[in-house]
Length: 228
Image: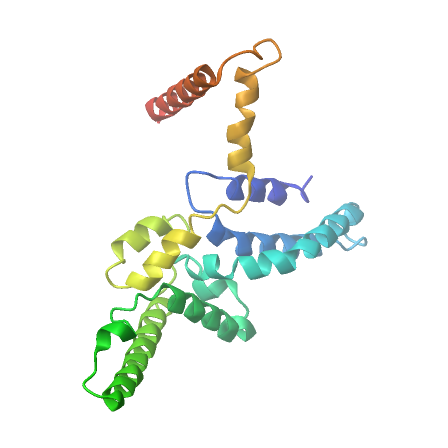
């Protein structure tokens, strides 16, 4: 069914465990909503009721997904602001700036300033604030003005190569892009255990179960690397 094929592709993409998926969440959901909208017209599609039902369910979760995917999308060098409507650019920029502020490392704390006078104390605070704001604007603007990377590039490798140029944003990207979009990878990992600890092997001790699962994982990865 043409309606379901993109949903299958979206599930495969967002369920990956070998690459960042948080940055893809926003474009996938928006793309699915537009796809379902096109197939929700009963005059041109006999499966319009199916498309409309799926679209309504997805729209229930979209407000949550929309807000939680902002930073992951912005910190993905393949998308950045291109995944946002023009009217949302300012809000997206503010969200990235707030994230930047949280990750900014304060080089000198107020206890380390040790000013000669109280007046110098407040002057140092003022100058320090100006430097922080300037650094924030400079790093964020330089990053957002770069052209989007190709879709097949690895965002984590990109950030590794550009960490010196964008140190604060790189630190945030490593955290946010490590977040999986779905729980499928972890669930798949645990589901493997039921084949080892089955109803006919329910008395296996913990250490043996751990060794069996690790061995299975190592052999599987060895075969995959050999085939590649």
